[in-house]
Image 1 (tube, rainbow, N blue to C red):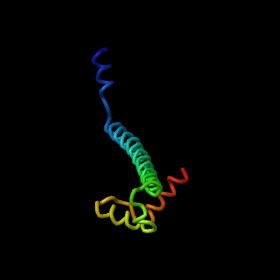
Image 2: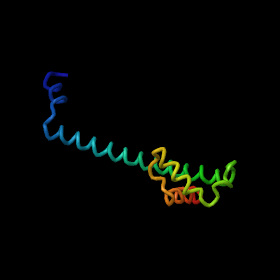
Image 3: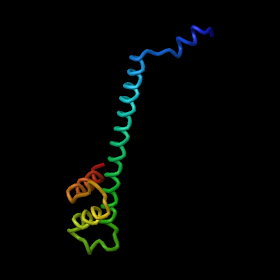
Image 4: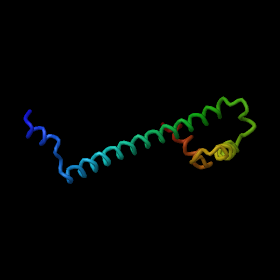
Length: 99
């Protein structure tokens, strides 16, 4: 390669620099969002699975009975698990049951 060819390969305009950064940011931000959405869906499905499994096989399930989701929500909040209100836990259980 000649010196002119090398310069043209590495020579980039300011607009091209900005465009490359914008494209990279857009693509990787979209990828990260999809990965997060997939992870949260899996998380919620697994929480539903754990609840369903506990309802069927929990050694102390009779102790909680109808208050299972309320008690579980309170305990999860106390250990700083987000998005685990009683209604959300019910939705996670339904997600597992449906899929």
